[in-house]
Image (cartoon, rainbow, N blue to C red):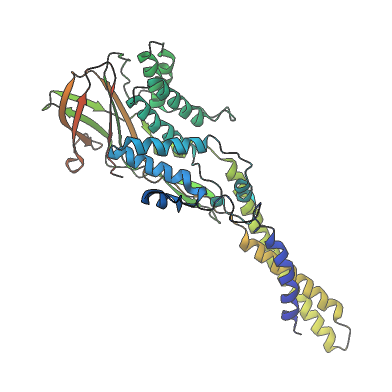
Amino acid sequence: MTLFSRIFFAFAAGATLLLASGCVTEGGGAGPSAPRPPAANATAADRRAALIAEKDRVLFDYRLGVTALRKGDDTTAKAKFDDAIALIGGIITNSADAARARSLFSAESTKTFIGEPYERVMAYYYRGILYWRDGQPDNARACFRAGQVIDSDPAHEHYDADYVLLDYLDGLASAKLGADGSDAFVRAQKGAGGKVNLPPYNPSANVLIFAEYGYGPRKYASGQYGEQLRFHTGDSPSHSARLVLDDGQKIVPLPVYDDLGYQAATRGGRVMDHILGNKAFFKAGASVAGDVALAGAAIAHEEARKRQRQGKDGDSAENTAIGLGVLGLIGKVAAAATRAQADVRQWDNLPQRLSFAAVKIPAGQHAGRVEFLDREGNVLEQRTQAVAIAVAADDRDTVVFLSELKR
């Protein structure tokens, strides 16, 4: 048997044991990422949803929820965001799939997706809009406050919540409910830093206009092994917007309150970043150790052949060569099997910029358009959308949601 064959058989046994430790799932079977089986009486949409792996369920709830909101399908939007919020609020960090994601031989993308902080914040933001539209500003306020908690991360004191709009809406909801919203207004002003002029609260404003435009951040992996999560946000053409009603009799400016690209890029590091960094370090070290061991095996093998040609006992050197060869191959396989890549699954239909206005408009039907403006304030004609607003005659706020995005 040649040296290669002896190394191969010895290596195969060791490598099988090594890799088996990274392939077993708790409890056996398909694990928590398996798709849910559709019910016998499920609709076609339910059957399609049932094909989604459980680990990706929140991600699809996010995407489908905001698409439904933009189409005016509030029922579906509420159902999707309620499902997502129930899941992201109940995620246990030491769950089986989270443990697998932390292991050397499983990718971060195997864990249940809940999103980065800016993605979770937006789930609460959209749900807050829907609550307010249903005449529940108290529940809307609770959603906006939950978003600020997610952004601040109470476990790390050096992260301060800095969404201008969430604080502003917190205070406005309080004012609408007859409470004092001044503290929230001050926080919003501080967060705005003079970049946007925040109008004082007007509890009598009966039309709340939520607007969004631009294309949100995109995740990508960088670093030697793709272990670093990074964000890219292009400079979307739409830098502001305005609502023009009743043949120009009413013009409502819609400036930028928050930029999701900024929120994604400045939120700070994650626990998973440290784990992925350790994986990358192990991957590099195992590869180098494998190279060194294989080089040692080649040298020992040559020494064994030299001793044999000289009529001396070369078994000791040959055994050393085999041992080093096995170690080298195991090191190279371990390096190849280590999954250090950052998870780049993303809520890919988010906007870049968020805006808001609260105005008082007479009850009745109002027609007009929403215009999106470039950096210089010029109207981007191809993006203009027709708008029709029905303002109720009762005390309930009319909530209008305007989006440049279509899906």
